[in-house]
Amino acid sequence: MADSTVYFVVPDGIDDAERVSGGNVYDRRIRDELRARGRDVRMVLVPEDRAHELTDTMSALPEGALVLIDGLIAVAAPEALGAHTARLRIVVLAHMVAGALAGAREGGDTAERERIALRAAQRVIATSEWTRSELLGRGLSEADRVAVAHPGTDAAPAATGSEAGLHLLCVGAVAAHKGQDVLVEALAGLVELPGWSCSIVGSMDVEPDFVDRMSAAIGSAGLSERIALTGVLTARPLTDAYDTADLVVAPSRAESYGMVVAEALARGIPVVATRVGGLPEAIAGNSAGTLVPPDDPWALRMVLRQWCADPARRTALTAEARANARATTRSWGEAAETVAAVLDGCRAAGERAIPALGRRSAG
Image (cartoon, rainbow, N blue to C red; front, side, top):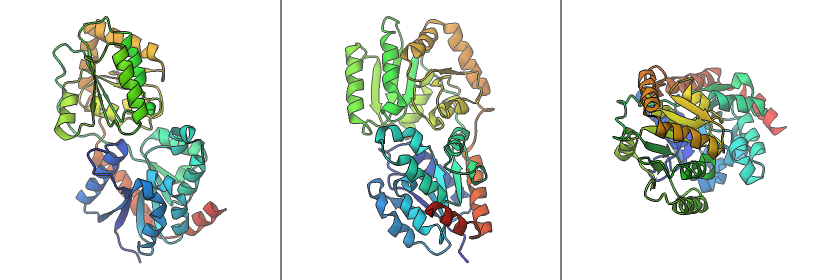
């Protein structure tokens, strides 16, 4: 009989302040919340560039062990899951649909690797209803095997904003799928409007060529004094960035949920986001959230122009955001309870379903 330990397999950069990602934040918070509830969570760190070694890593786990594995690692080395599906109880934590977000760029077998990995799992935990629906719609898993544990936000006082009410904030790795180039193009059409400024916060190491093009576009538009590329901010500096923001912009081309949007609304900050993936879900009908088409700088520019030109609208949306902040906020405790329930279900079920899943994934 296996013990109650949960082996949490994650990328080795989970606690690296310079490698901030929504997935790493989610993994850390679930780890901490489960431990706070008395769970024995043992972290198994796997270098992203050596995920092929996962088979050996999982071989070292005891027979019948309960394994929660980050989807990034699972999809990178699906054969390892298939090799151990009969001896381990595997739960995949799917932060995204890899085939949807990465397949077009990689042009390879991402979707098939994802299919193998998820078929080898006893259960799957998705971080949004959109991700769950994509997994089901693409035939990557079955409805009764996928649970949803939405990301949480921490209780925080309402942001104070800036004196002018015109400071924009965009948070996320500076990369094509996050769409910061669309934001820059939109703002280039507002150069004549006074007072606004924008901070683009996030790692600039993910797609250096994209960052170079962004920097060149900012310079060409004459916006170097108004748009700041800050790099990664964490802890107090990131809190301060939210506190001085008047409007958060999420111009993503692809997004599985939208933790930044949820964080902004929890702080009483209005948001503008693209109507893609899980972003509408993160806004959750909050009237302080505005949705625009993806990859459409003109539509985004019109919304931002209205924000800059209409003080009454700014005041109304900020009031709505502050009024709705508590009602629309999910806690990390809720997410952890869902994860714990899935893990407990796998533990209680023992190994009944694992041989069948193993045979199916090998077929």
